[in-house]
Image (cartoon, rainbow, N blue to C red; front, side, top):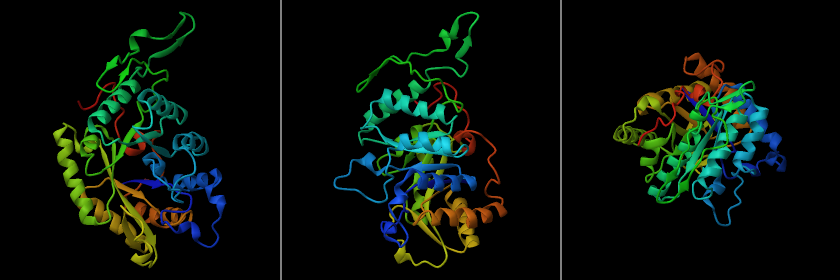
Length: 343
């Protein structure tokens, strides 16, 4: 089972910041880094920085939002936590493709292959598809062994292992190559939050697909429809990871306390009961795992790691320790060959 944590300062419940004992210190880097370290102590695959501001909301200063630009925060967190992966959100309509490709390739190099890009599309499908093609092509600018640093021969890199993109499309003209070396995991992981209008993007290029849903039946429906979409693009189900959003609550909290959190399935009960429910849902809906949205933080993170993770391990469902070094390794995704993607 693969598990990620969706990071927020106070928790995912809109009123979490109003709890007794919370203060503005929750907005500081050290508070967020402590949550990440706790998630790493539990062996979680990654931390997701969702970035509400990627949607350009009007008059929205939600306490759910992480108070840093996500890729900048990942660069700092990657030096504070050395094993867990990081998936950072960025919108295609807010960044030029070369600059975005360079930023994420840099993050992947800094973190030694532990980052991913959570794609927020522009809702212009043709443009987004071309955008993704450009980014993927730029990430493939160099072969894994292109840089030889041969001092005796004066060869910094092998010219025949540099690949100039020379893209000329409807929306973008990008020559390349990218001026960042290829990362230890080949290229950053691509993830996408599935919506009714983005099945094609998810099925075509995403390595990790998040299912936002508030009911188990909807999770099963989305998962089944996604399988059909993958087949249409010649992709295999085993080559992607499908994760559902869940709100784990250890104890007897009522649904009324959780119903303000959209697009996630609440699971309330004992640690053993939550683990059992996660296992059953993963099996019946064909899921590879879950993204945890704790209603309150850091208590929700600590409770899940200290109480639920041991139950999952006892059932043989979750790792006891990290076995790989990269995010692709954590997720069991293959190292990609250059230009190995669906057309």
